[in-house]
Every structure is written in structure tokens, then in C-alpha cells.
Length: 219
Length: 219
Image (cartoon, rainbow over the protein chains, first blue to last red):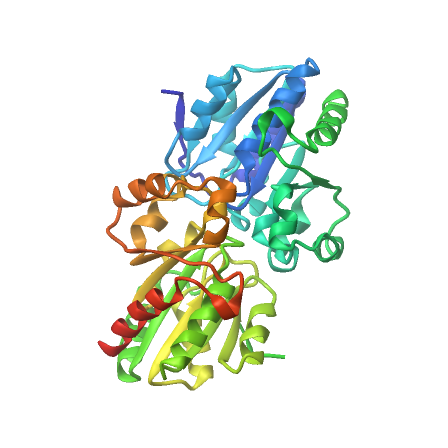
């Protein structure tokens, strides 16, 4: 069983913890990346492909997995040889900065990229600064092209947008132009089109890895 | 523009409002159905097909649409001839019983089914009793078959599960048995398999309409 940290929320002090995390990540030469998205957006599969790609480039990465109760995803990362720790929010709808610190400390990690896979939720996580250096949303084309029009706080909040499951774009009639128009009303974040249906022939991951690597080298 | 009710949350009194709603729905011979699901689960398309099916059976329906900011979906229902009112939660992650009452009162409806399309969120709505007579989750097969294992409170909370976009089941390798096993650990709710890719040839809606009709006749 992987290590599991249970979240006990300390309301109102999140900003304080987030600032402390920022400081700690800097000291440890760590780029922390907050990966958000709806349930089923494909966060875990995307992240697995990205971690493997970074490994090829000689960049270490570790994963803090957020979930309401389970530890399915952490086990997957550990079995692939990546450091990973599980945070269980016990039903809470977001991860906070305090529990991220507990999870991070238990990893004993430095000099690399720490991915935080947030709880599947397009609303609440946009209210909680974790002290991360980069905020990414993974959006499955299967969710539909109208999501930036509906989930305004989240699409305003992020630094980069990763479209996932793009191999099914035509099957569901996803209109990239309409999606991007909605996003551009809120945000200049770059959009990456990816597909990791086949982990060994993942598409679009190279470009995301370029972004992560550039951000990491600048830490 | 459709009517839009802005939600002002009154914390702590939700149960009181929910009880009052239950009483009101009973007096008005209304079955209220809370439709929940993740962003992009296909709630609106499913609901449109269901409303049309009920209309064929001579059952009136109206829709209270919940969204963070937009009123895209309400306009769609109105253009199809159904009564519909928009609730904007102004970024909040759920709908509460008080705003449902405001939306319901503005509809001026009785003797039929009122559908409440909740905000796209698999977590928070499971904490808010709306006074509804039936709680339904719409789960797209594209979200993956592991969701009952991860979103435990929601999958414990609902009375019926509607699998949507089942025409893409094979394309994404959705394992119904694994999904149902996770659900059965929490809940005996019936599972309906639907596809409304083509609204005029919607599949599986007849069976859901049977459930709604039976519940409505018993109000």
C-alpha cells in the first residue's frame, strides 16, 4: 500500500501555507505543477506519459495524488517507478496547501518536478493556491467545446490548457475554434492537443514537456 | 434572454428549505428530479431527450438549469418549447434548496416533472438536499469505469445511474462489469445505458422514462 496522507482542513490559513510551499519549492529547486480537470479528463494517463517523457530527458519527477478516498492512481505511478504519495481528502472537493506540504515532505524529494494531481473538479480547486509554479488544466475533448464558457473561474485561473483524448475529436464533433474563442475571452494560456490512448505512442506530450522543462530550468 | 436567478447562499439552513420544497412539490403534484454529473457528462442532451419522451407520453416537464455563469442550456430548452429557468451560482460549486425554491416559484409550474440540472460536479452537490423526489447521476462512459471507486459520496447518494454516450463504450474500452462492481459496493441503484448522439433516435431513454413516469404517478 502506498503512503496515504489524510487531509484535515485548516480554513482561512491557506495563503500562509501556500507562501511557505513556494519558498520551500524554491529552496529545493522544485517546479510544482498543479494538474486540474474534471472527473475522467484523463489526468492520470496524461501525467504518466509526461513523467516518462521527462525521464527520457533526464528530469526527475514525482507525483502527489489527490483523491477523495482511493489510492488507485498512486499505485500505478509507483509500479512505473515514480515516487508518489496519496492524499485522501475524505470527501472534500479540493486539495489545500497544508496537505500538499505534508505530502511533499513525505516524498523527500528535491531537484525535479513535482506534479500535484488535484481532485477531479472544475470548480473548487481554482480557489486554493497551493504554492505551485504552474497551473494546468486537462480538458478532455469528450467534455464538449463549451466548457470555458461555463467554468469561468477555472479557465481564468490556469497557465496552460491540455486538451486530452484528441483522437476522439472528430467522433464527438469537438470545435477547437469555439473552445479557443471561449478561452481567449478569459486567458492567453497556450493550448496543447494530446492523445495518450497508446502510452508508447503518446501524441502532443513532447510540446508539453518543452513547457515543463523550460519552467523547470528557470526555477 | 431567459430568466436568471442569482444564488445567494444562506449557510446552515439548507435542510429547512429542502423540507419546505418537499412539501411544496407534494402540494403541486410535482416530481422533482435532481440530475447530477461531471462536466461534460451529457446532462443537457440526455435531459432534452427525456423531456421529449415524457411529452410523447403526455407528461409535462420543466427544467431548472444550474450553471456557474452562463445561460446556454436554458435557451436550448426554451427554444424546444419547454419551461426553463436559469440559476447562476456565481461560481459556487453546487445548487442549494433555497435557490431551487426561487427558480421553481418563477416557473409557475404544477402537475408534472421538474428537472433540476445541477452544476457539473461529482463532489459537492451530494451534500445538498434540494427536497427532490429522485436523485440521478449521469455518468459518461468516457469518464472511465473507475468513477464509483473514486467519487464515493456521490455514488452512494443517488437513486439511479444513467450511463451516457454508450455508443462510444467500445472506443474507450469501458468495462461495465467493473463499473457496476464499484457501484454495488455502495448502492443498489439501477443502471441505465443511454446514447443520445442522435436526438431523434435516442437509445435507452424509454427505460428511464418508465422510471420517471412510475415515480411521477406515485407522487
